[in-house]
Length: 548
Image (cartoon, rainbow, N blue to C red; front, side, top):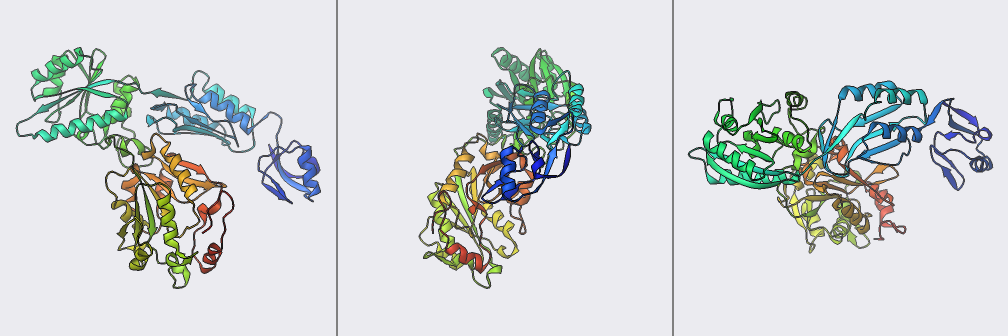
């Protein structure tokens, strides 16, 4: 490909490298120029253009992307139409993505102009989530590079998708003297919630003494009554194959494949089989809803992956589980009990308005009302269940501006330290029933009820909305407000300084649910007296914010 400046008269059939604006019109980057385009440009006085011209054997970016995506991805996934050299590949249902990391590395070594990125190996995805993206960087790539990739993966796709199947699961808990009944009830509740997220049913639940004979009898009974997976949670941890629970499995006719797991939490897990029936000795950490080794093992079983010693050993890479961006979603809510959706609003109104010359912009009069009241009323009218307003600077006056509105006030004593503290204070003040929160800024009075309702509808349409971040965008730039699923509340509670939620957004790019907005009001905050004057006299265009 040749990228150069050409005389406009010579550009028919070439690809425009940069957006070209001219009188009453413009042409987007990537436009294949026609005779009509060239005539219009010449008439506008544009004599030269930077364009891309393919060399012999070059393939257009969209053709190359579509061709490679079909080659690299399995057929049981959903493909976007190639555009600007990109194809996004999504999963149609819940399942695991698996691949050989070395193969992916070799694909990306062939030509720097061809990039192929995936989620983590063994990542659990739900319907509609992105598994991979293929992006061609320039407008054209050589046919020879495509052929090298085709030769590398000639026998099979570069990765595989394994849908999860439903399974009937039995739970056996053993009791040691002195253990309270509430321990067993809590473990059962957590297990039911864990299985529910995976589409499985707990069909039997038993409690017996911590005795190998009694456990063996229950294992046999559960296998005979249709259980497809048996979970055994001991009153005492499994530390050796001679312990009660491993010996109970042997007595029931089973074979222990693995005792001990290179995943933490989850080290003290046992995996055994009676024929093809999996029997899992649960680690003690599985009494908690947090992600642990049991979750990974269950996901692999339900994806019909053969549980070999090599498969268990492979879990060590990434097996030190933390709240990190590489696998954020399963841990965040994988085992949270189901609850009714409750989407609330949060309005940040604690700032000091430092650039306003001493005036608190939130109290500034716009069309007869304080600015902060405009925003609060818009949020209340958008259909949220509840609204929390975080106040700080001139708290009494801001509260008075909201008088008679159905809002909850949360005071942030560290309002001078930055917006992050206000977000943390607001999230901490939410009750446990909240599943999602719309966070808006008090100095954006042009955001309309319609924009908010559009965001809310798009967020609630996601089946996994508690694990998604819905945000508006316009002309390729993201704005506010932002809707956060409850999976991200723990991280938002830890925010400090003036960064707000930007770092959390950056850490969880795969969870973004962008919604295209027709209006730039999603960017229009007020920081200066001049901006305030402009906003005060604003009258929104059709489809934008409503007049104040």
